[in-house]
Length: 286
Ligand code: SF4
Image 1 (tube, rainbow, N blue to C red):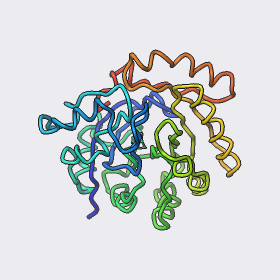
Image 2 (cartoon, rainbow, N blue to C red):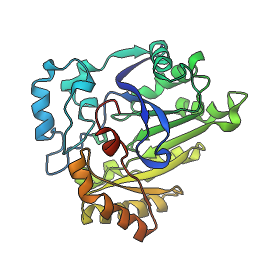
Image 3 (cartoon, rainbow, N blue to C red):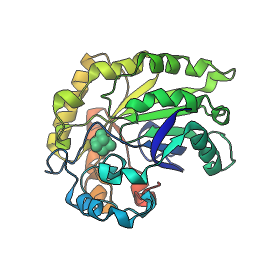
């Protein structure tokens, strides 16, 4: 039976992108191919705040106890090795059971499944079919992969996802989405490593809904996003594009959400809020 290293598994409301406001199960896998620190931190290093937390990680037993950070990757504990012991390796059986425990009706109704990270399209691709084929997952109708858009799909997984909507007799209502949060230079990642139009096009080619989401903090980020959008469009990308304000904590988010909304309005792009910040203070498990 396949296993996944799970950083978090919780039930909340999707705060970002196309399915903002939709009740969703979030399955956060451990590990990422990037180490976005941003905000002047060298690539590969945690922000000063996250670094201090890593030094005393032994004081925490679960993710919900970890402090939030105001700079750098707000999912820092889902990829940094210092936090790996907080993420158990679970079988698809155990994950499906746990999902049913946290669903309000103890089975799927109209909830969405968000498979996020870290980067959820790393080697875990080989484990998803076992999980999605599990008897307790048969009521599931909508999945979003939240990815940084750099990972090729394996041939086996591509074929599985192509067939997923049609494997079930009520297939007409099934929807598969890739929410691609492509990383701009402010993340510290190299442009050619982070902006991969040909990879994102393959998500579209299997018949999924695909949209791009750019986190914007400065005018430079907006310029970089426009350059990236052009490369994605030139590469055949046809989906919607969202601009989203930076800020895992309210004090930072409130500084630029209105400006980012205006940039979106004036440039024919969509605005994505981060509902989890005002609603739940972006705590782990929300
Ligand atoms: S790609 Fe996402 S999860 Fe990975 S380090 Fe960057 S912001 Fe964090």
